Image 1 (cartoon, rainbow over the protein chains, first blue to last red):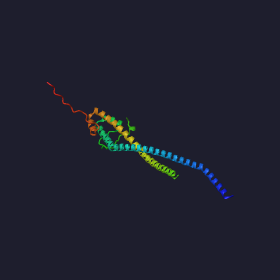
Image 2: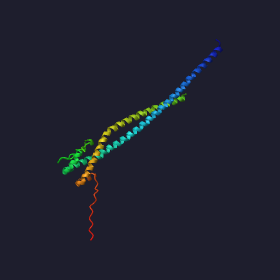
Image 3: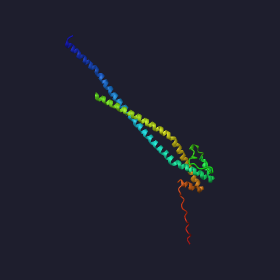
Image 4: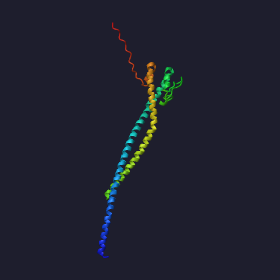
Length: 132
Length: 95
């Protein structure tokens, strides 16, 4: 084996090695492109989920605010008025017995004579328990 | 080649951030839904009581037509405005 022969065979081997690397390189590039495309698709999906979750969260938060406002208004304004109304009706019914049947339809009993009316003494029953 | 790698790294980073945002939003959403479900029975009960009170008030307004003695009670709570017109003085008969 002489030097030029070796050189020739060596260059031949490197050429064949380069030729065999070519498809590998192409496959790697193809795989890289596929990976990036999959990442982009996943990112798009994830951002869509984010937007959907944000909208749901915002809607629930708005519902929660409306519900809390309603309950606060009910407790602060409507419930005391309602209890006062019922208490006064009970007092009124003591002197006007013809009102008693109407009140009894709502589960309200006239307060006994001499009994001090309490604002929360007889709250209105729930709708399901009403005898109306 | 490094440029392509950095793009993939950027995408992975964005995906990671997006996943964290999803988790945070899901947790907030869960807490809010739990609070809303806790308040809903109270809201329904309050609404039912208000409906019942409205029906009671209607009956009382109906009753006040038969027995005006209840009017001061209703008016004191602003449940009935004093819509009654002042009694008109009869015109003197013209000669």
